Length: 201
Image 1 (cartoon, rainbow, N blue to C red):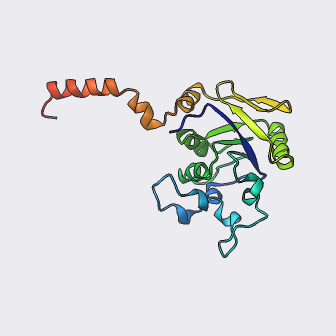
Image 2: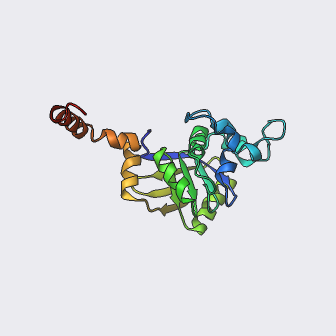
Image 3: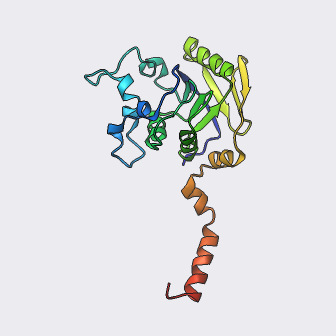
């Protein structure tokens, strides 16, 4: 998993509440177990027309947000079913950080495990970030995970909370497999001891 330390990038404003995982990645795209290739299908039902052509008025299709790596959204983002394909699709679109007033619990947890930083902020701060992204689409926002800050030059600076363990995992690029491999020496020692003491196992 790619470590997350600092991110300076354009933010895309998706001013919608209760965006569920079926909106993020519709059920017909859940056949794969690969983490890549889902970005093109993300938000499919609201991103494309009936012929599969991009809708020019959908905010994430606008050229000024094509390189965005930060997504600003409304409350209760990621609600609905617990599909891990949702963070996979967002990451494949290029988003490393999602900012919202609130997230659904399972989506929130899955995001950390896939290298995405979900940040919860008070509604008024999300509103300010949303307005900034809408009015100044070329303005970059900087996310500093170590300092737990969100800044845009001298325009604004917000602090955010994060669980220390999750922060450690993101800073060091540790998913569940990476955390297990940190104990590799202990695991190898245990296996050697068991093999010698219980060779029949």
